[in-house]
Length: 435
Image (cartoon, rainbow, N blue to C red; front, side, top):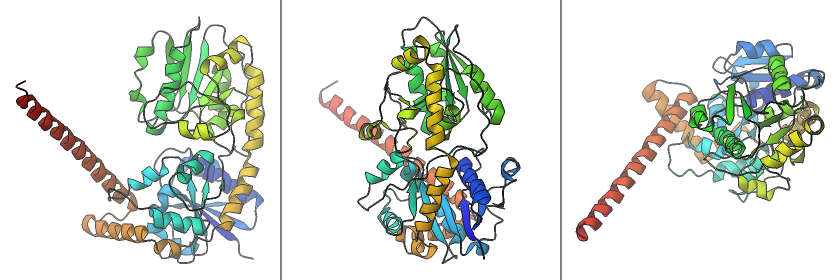
């Protein structure tokens, strides 16, 4: 009997993390435990990825070398903001099915940056994926973000982040330091996360404690310069560990961290080590709010919220002062760490996540043909063809970059023109009043 084909699709040059890890973990587990499926992973070639996951029966294809005709009868699983990337490759596969993944609350904004229109109408696309069950959410935060925007019925169909299937055996973590508070951040320092990092640092800087703070940053990113690190000295000392992976990262965390702040996969990766783990509020702009959530107090798989979604959820939050009291004054590092670990193991197991994934892809009846009937998709791919003809660049990625650049220029011009109008009105008022 021919195997059913599942094609995990993403197109990114970023180092392995986030969606790539989730996709590859799911593909690995399915390959080993669901013999009726054949898994494909389609992205840019990455030697490290194939070395780590090459032991599984996954077929790896380079994004630009894949023979997509081979996948006519496949179900494609892709992040929602890659829908144009995907359809530009498989638009001729009329029978192939699609399931789109909502994995970030700002995903609609990310997709709109790929389209030149100032106000994008997503109604047709959202109606098509809703009607044909071609969607799932990472967690309730992502569900809330879509529920606010559209009246179509979207069910709470989740595929949460998951732990790896080959977890190391548990190793005892170190006790709390007597010399300082040892707080960690695990994750990227890109624009969508940097203000969460800044918020925790701001709150720590206001804590009335007789010890200084060592703040470990395990990760890197293009927005880390947005934090004025020197301004927190001498109370907070920053230790930059950059990217660490595997056992090296785990040993570093066990040895150096008393409390980890993280979101997404990073949060459960830290928690499973037995380290107390708290989740932050997420915001694309600067904010200040002293609310944090122990991992074991989250619900519906959310691993980070904006402030409005946190209010809608039933999650119990607490302050940084109370968390530090729990860990340092009440000597709760090991107890709290074990509660976080047990919750992560039970709630985010790879088996549970895979079972949920199989269910949602089997329910999807969204075909490529149905997607191509959506006016927005047809127009966008026609525009890409025109761009390709004029610029000679075949890939949707370059078309996306072109659109985003034009939109940024238009926004900057709009701001400049508004400033000019304000100045003009101000000068008129000053002349009128002889100022």
